Length: 393
Image (cartoon, rainbow, N blue to C red; front, side, top):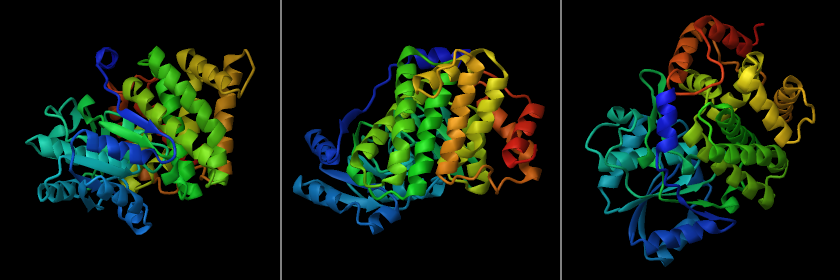
């Protein structure tokens, strides 16, 4: 943990050039043109193509005389096979850059297609820390959801369907070249997806703020992200066409990504990753269901976890109490209230009791030496926590 902390503090992070505001995707494409790219591979998912969301993008690219082809084979929790198929299509083009249009899965998939293009080794050999040695093809990201923050992270998560696990690739060279936070592209997002992705951003803010790897910079990003999500996510959920709320959420998502890129996440993500790998529970939804339980475990340990949760609650105007335990509890209560308002189940119905020991071990393995959480789980504690998450007290 402490070695990783020093590495994250010392890494020279290159954040993407960012274009913000409704219509900013056009400015991003003009930037791509200015950098000399005349042929790009668009990486996206089929649903966005079917919705016609890419038509304005195609028109702008044509006007800029940027040739383009589209790979729409990325699905939620992208698999190695989907990424390899995208790389195969890339090889048939003269593309000098990638344009990712979609949610976090699409941007993660594009990162790894770009990594395959530059590194002469299979995807599995790039799993872990600092193994994307030759970098990636220039990547321009246009997120269409507000949650993952993948447009500003050095991470990509890939599903290993055979082993039923998720593979994390972590390398500063995965950072996109530029990104556009364009709320115009998020107006049609259904309420359920708005809620799940927004809760993902909130998880990034909270876990990075609690992390022992946090810095002054990550704290600033995390606090702003959390307060923005708590203010604007309910509005974006209930008023899907509210452009202001959507734009605030887009910025919050990126801030959350910037925060956890340096500070890391924690057991909420470690458990959610396993729920996604085993049962295909959408990542943001899994985070939302797991979050109150992990935060209660953290609060029970007192110390840093309690202090930081209390400080975050006060910053977000959830509590005025000087009692840290009471202030921290207000944060958990607010999260539970949001879950209820968003119709997010209290417990993941997919979670099987027979799988709990293995999930506990996998989550602990993911966190140990990787996530600087304020309180670590042993196997017995992890099993008890998962039984609570399942709804067995």
